[in-house]
Image 1: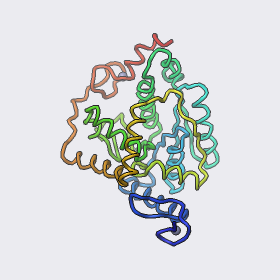
Image 2 (image 1 turned 120 degrees about the vertical axis):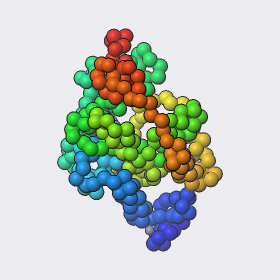
Image 3 (image 1 turned 90 degrees about the vertical axis):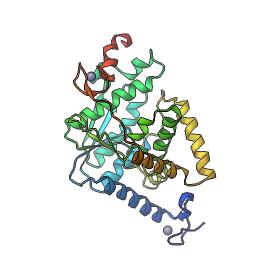
Image 4 (image 1 turned 60 degrees about the vertical axis):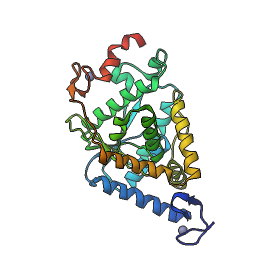
Length: 297
Ligand SMILES: [Zn+2]
Ligand SMILES: [Zn+2]
């Protein structure tokens, strides 16, 4: 196998484009695509971006790339209180930020909510959805307080495509209609726009890129992540991709086509009676969880 660009020994084959790359041509290709995504989103170098970094390979790679290309970034990590796991992840983030002179802010569920994911897990089966609601709220709130114009999230192509297929199976089409490079387009002063610069990059290529650049990351997975449905959908899509290279990109462009045909019908936004944040119901999800906090303590 030789590189389609320079003829040297190839290290990777990208079947969806019928090309092989050596390591230096792969790195160049990867970075070019990343920068193109950012230009497409329309971010200027001086606009402040809060980067949500957990310490896993995707978020560490996103942080590395945004730093490398000179964006105005601060790192935000959330410690949900998952004993024996999150502290290990955050250690990688802390060391990387120190070495690269990036401001790093860590916010803890325990301090902010007087509640941890470990506490919720004792009573709830689907702890991930609770944890997700509380984490997203805090990321947004802190990014806003830090004066960020954007909040960068490290979702890759595989994550996006899995979500779209899961939404389709569950009939939650409105969720798919809200997917994109920039989300949170509903204009509220309280919301920071979320961007997903890795949305066009397959997970496998992020792994290769991070290894070639020796980007440090924590490789363990969350003890509560048992999303069996997502895993099955992921396996199914990987099988399709193997049989029919390009399937993942086709699903992604299907999302974009769908958005051109159907506009999401947003319900009239109300304001949470407790915290005042925009929400679709009387009380937002976060306040609902916190109201029931007694049952977890
Ligand atoms: Zn080459
Ligand atoms: Zn609320």
